[in-house]
Each structure stands twice: as C-alpha cells, then as structure tokens.
Length: 385
Figure: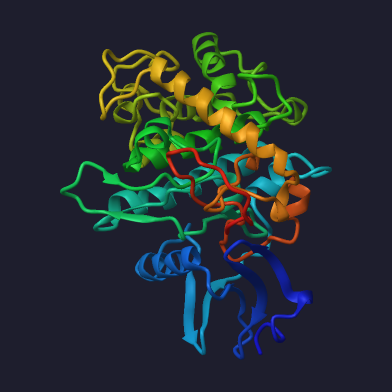
C-alpha cells in the first residue's frame, strides 16, 4: 500500500477525527493520506466539506487534493505532500533558527494570494474559517500552501453573511464572528492579520504564559501598531531575532499597515484580501487599505449592531473567551494529544509547543482545529484536525 499499511513509521500526525500518513503512489508521487476515524460524526462532516470545497479550487498557494476514497467503511483524503512542515513550526519551534525577513514576506504574500483567490475568484466565494500559522504548509523554498479546508464554508454572493456555529482556533477568531456566529470573508481577514502579527513579532497568537491582556497577541500589538506607523520606529514591535539580521524598512511598514487594518474591531472596516496583496507587493498609498481610518485608531464606530463591532463589546467578549481558554487548561497537555473542547477546538494553540508538531510536515491537516459552541459549554475531548 502507499502508506505501508498505515504504519507508524509513516505517521505524520493525528487528531480527534483521524490520522495523516505519508505515502507514495505507484507513479512515485509522494502524498499525505488523511484517514478518517470510523464513527466520527463531526469528522464525517469535515470529510464532506473538504471533498466538496477543495476539489473545485486550484491555485499555486493552496494545498491540492490528489483524490479521495470511500470504501469498506473507510474515508480517505489524499493530498499533495508538502515537505517542510508549517509556518508555526518555523516561527515558534524550540531551537529553530529565525526566519529571515524575505522568507516572512514571501509566506505572507503567497498566503494572501491564496486567500484572495478563495474570496474573490471562486463563485460562490469560500471562507476558510481556520487561517493560522499551523495551517500554512511550506516547501523547501518556503513557498506557502494554505491548508485544511475541513471547516471551510461556501458563501453565496447574495448573502451578506453565513450564520453558523462558531468554529476555528482561539487567538485567531474574529471577535464579531466569535460572538454572533455571523461569518463573512472579513472573518478570514482578521485571522490573516493575526498571522501577519506572528510574522512581524515572532509571538504566538495566544500565549497563556504572558500576563493578562498580553496573552492575546492582538490586544498586545494594537496600540503598538499605531505608534510604529506614526513614528516609523518598529524596534519595539518587530521580532527581536530579526534585529541582528536586518529587514527592509519599507516592506516592514507595509506589513505592519496590513496587519493593523486586518485586525480592526469592525469587520466592515477591514480590507479585502486583494487590497492586502497589493499593499504587500508594492509601495502604494495606504488610503485604499485604510479607507479613511487611521491605522491603529479603529476602536469606536458608534453604536454596536449585528454588522458592526465596537471596542467595548470586543473587550467584553475577549474576557469571556479568555476565561474559557484558561479554564480549559485544567485538562493538561498541549500539542497533538491535548484534550480540547466538545468539538475539538484547541483553546490554547499558541501556547502549545511547536516542537511537538515536528512530525507534521505535510498534508494540509490542522490538528488543533475544531469547533466551539457559542454557549461556551466545555467538555474534555480529543483534539481535532
């Protein structure tokens, strides 16, 4: 068999809904095979979503589905093999050398182009719903591939949003989506902005080892973004490991501006992914990106409605989500074996050890993605993909 009978030697990783093995087709093509655990209802839904969505998308910066199999009670997804692990591993893995600035920019730009394709070139548009550093796979040239479409949703053009149960990863969830379940492409933009902050700062999206309010990367960075764009001094914001290696000041400013605009409280005020691509590619005026909003100053937008989101509501919801995340720590471990919520949401992904993810180097399956009920009800459960 391609995976040598799904041997442990070929195991790339596992989660609550299945296992991923490295394999080789008779043609010699290397693949990553995700095997769904039998009797996993949520996994069955993920399987159907992945097949339906990823089979119709084809882009340089999206992981490719080679094929799938449904036979004898088994459900298999066969992906292209992406050999150089994940962005999370290279950014946060213990003992890993720091990523040079050109690599960080390449990863940001490629990932942005992949997302822009999903949002603006697919009809109906596709909302990924779980953009994060562990879902960006890298090859040996550090070309990125957006991976894991198990949580993705199609959004008809006639709809302003899709109402659904909240799914995703704590630290990356857009606040208005987390509080209401109303999903738009701007929910992905927020998550992408968090990932840009990871590339800029070298910090995790959520780190329970940090002090309260500094544990959330967005909350810690938001006031610093405005200061950096105002005075042009990025030293207090940029990953200290880049200090001795250098970076292009103009390129860094563009990425900081993109991150600042992407993590605005109000989804309507965030840019489209195509705007972010343009801003990352060329040194342009930020007026289009900011749409009249001064970077880092989008805190108050009048009264709170279902389609807008203000700072007061944001802070209230973040306190609630943070309490849920910290409460989940009583269940112990991090990494692949970490117990999570009822639907597999890893509530402390940014505090988990990237070195525990070293075996995950292909296949596009997020091992800590999952689902959280908006009621906040937590249960001990195995992690999801």
